[in-house]
Image 1 (cartoon, rainbow, N blue to C red):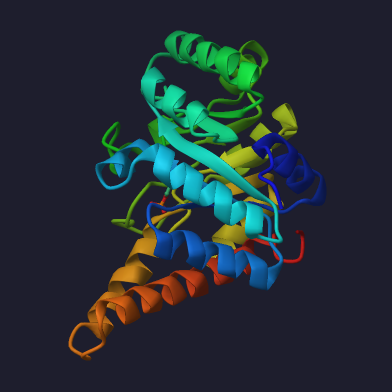
Image 2 (cartoon, protein in one colour):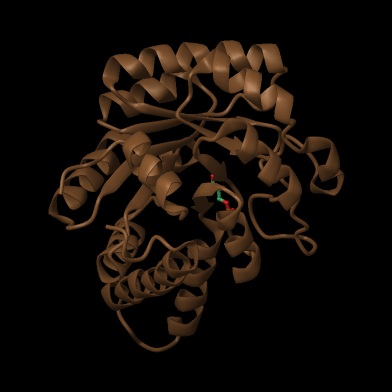
Length: 280
Ligand code: 13P
């Protein structure tokens, strides 16, 4: 199946009241593990690559690999650039055939976030590529401190203006999640999420989806989240598997294959909780 745009994938999720898993991946084990899980559960998926991953893999090379794997897959796949804070990275993703981009100017003032996002929307439209942007602050990327999260929730009136002036396809909201491993039990502001969905009536995105309970994820989906970003949970499963296999005498190929299968299991579980299973 050919790659699909995020806009098209999330419009269906919005209509059907489920969320698509956005899995951040940077190597063959992660890409194939997630695709295997999507095939098994018949889920649409978003495979995302972040600028930080360029330390390991060239965006053009991994983009070509994912495009080829998506072409063989029997489920819809979106190839997404996560957290672009630089224009040059967006251009590299567009040239590599990504079908979706997240511009992250959430650390800027509202005015500057709008202006930066408008610029990215304009260029992405020329390529027929969907755009996600963020308003408010999801912690864990160094922009803000998790202990001050109440200051950082997305404000409904600002979100309405932001969406109207930028024309984005999906909005990442801040309701108390953080990237990485939670230092304390997450407390989500579901009420704010509900208000945002009522006001915006569009696909909403939740970053920091790892480490949330099934109940929290289910409440987020029930209140309007249509895309949930998961990275840390995949990496923890991969590293646990590597530790378990460390002294087994298994060769490197065997260990990497087991990592793929560990990623598959976590991704499969999340697809079921997000209710994307059976929607491909
Ligand atoms: P986690 O660190 O919770 O997996 O979040 C990933 C994410 O939101 C990437 O954009």
